[in-house]
Length: 235
Image (cartoon, rainbow, N blue to C red; front, top):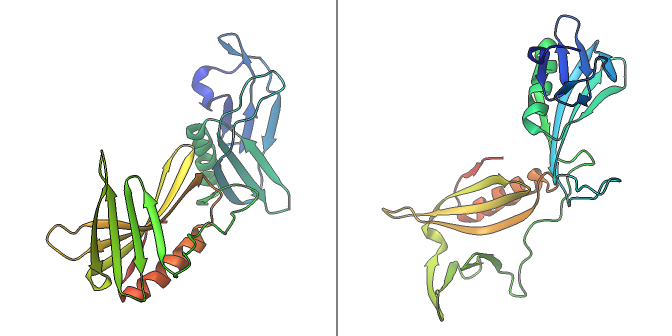
């Protein structure tokens, strides 16, 4: 049985000199004597780390699986690949970087391994306006009228409403955040003025790793052109 210091992370031993990855199952407070899986890596052309979330499922033992998923794929130059599914994302990151480092590669970050899915952009209402509701705030962008209506629900009754001109938008940004297992894309406008108020014009929330970032980038750039401002893309 290897010493605890030999483990890179979790149940994985990585021998950089041999370019060999070994997995040891747990046994009481340690690990078994022999590895149940060993792979010597040769001629790796890419290392990809997939991160995504999904609805938890029940295993055959009745235990729920984690919503957060992680997979490392090392693609061989000769064809084929090594696939490692690791629930501990910190460990998966260490594995990906360790393998990539030996071959002088950068780790490629991806979402769900079955591919990103489009169709998550906001739809416009019957009047062609872009409507976004986030928390207690509703923002309606009417590009034809050239104004943005902002309605904020009060804690008890009613709403406060105000309208600003689209010419007050001085910057636009696409922001991306993850609070496991949910990811959020948000198109945020910064308004002219000393306080540089920020309002969200469009947003999407769903399981991490499934929405298509390219779709949101193009949407943000197109919206920025209507305001005649630059678009800052954070994803």
